[in-house]
Image 1 (cartoon, rainbow, N blue to C red):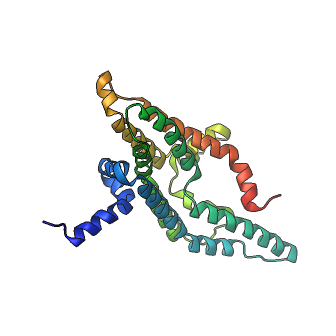
Image 2 (cartoon, one colour):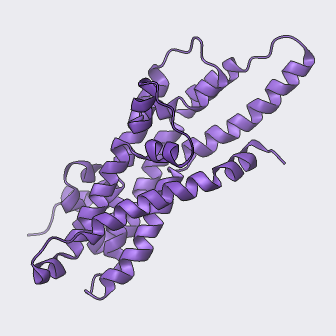
Image 3 (spheres, rainbow, N blue to C red):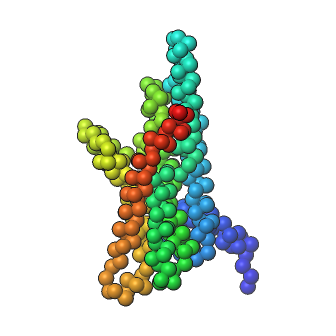
Length: 258
């Protein structure tokens, strides 16, 4: 009996839906991505994350224009125009690109895990599939940011509020400490910002997925595999550290500061 056209269409479209499927059934999604469709799953995730980020841009740009509405002298108007151009570029980069710390973390996970698992005859595409599907919580983050951006009242917002508006969704430890009146700077501040529900979710999925790939070795040793979780957490921490170190240069580039 031949497969129905509808069933064949669903099978062809399934890789495009893997980031959403991963939120409910990460194991099944990783199996599909790792066996056949790793690159397509990763591309689908990136397109979805960037599209959801772009959906918040009209509101953010309108709020920014209102917050920088010049009043007073021509000098103040010229300053507002220059600041507006730089902040527009910042918002475009922030909303149209996936979170750069997680991009760096994913690269580290892939570069380290693929050679480690190659000895167990695990294909590199399986590692790529774990990375793609394990980053599916970014879809939840972008959806939450979209809701925050479109539902926050516009009254009283200044330019700085608009730039950081989307980040109000993923507050994490930094937001909890801020609400308690505790301010953390430097490396501790970066660590507090990185400690959030989405990041922990991604780390857990990456570690679990890599452990599934290494399950044969785990049975041989007779104890749980720990290194995938340590690798995922270490790569996440390193990704945030690299991002924090390069952030001043990136901001100068985006803002047009010579």
